[in-house]
Length: 194
Image (cartoon, rainbow, N blue to C red; front, top):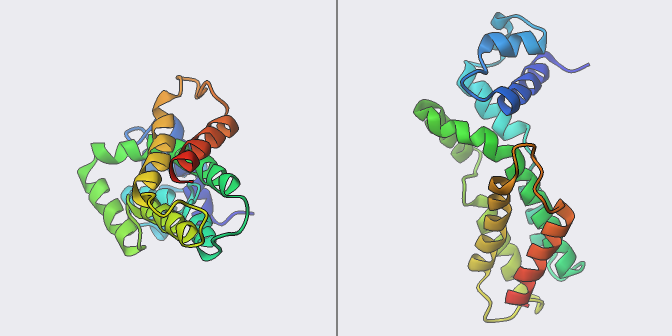
């Protein structure tokens, strides 16, 4: 059985995805989590902290994969590695952008989120910088052209993954399956740096 804290975060995550920030009230979160509103405040200081924790704890993570690949350059097929990065990045952005968009409607929440991310050692450039480090490591291993621009390649790959969210139709259908998209993006980057 999930802890109360975990149930609250899961309920908030689902509500944020389906109802949006404005309609995700503490009352609705408590109802969906099967607890009292008072229970929310035993675990969190308020709605803003719940929101920040959802973003930090419930969304797909890209960092561990990038860290792992950077530690072992020259291993695995480079196209497969880039395809997996694109796949995970697209899933991350698909999950996070609809929720993150709410941040910009609430300046206090945006400030708190940025502070929390900064304290955790992250930020919006973190995935781009991590992918660029991986591509530099692969360049040092001889699998990426010496004159390739890892920063530009990282920005292009992750930017494409982020942009894919905005191409989804209202039912969430991207038109192109994720696997095909990820492979196409990996090949495009690979042809640019390989």
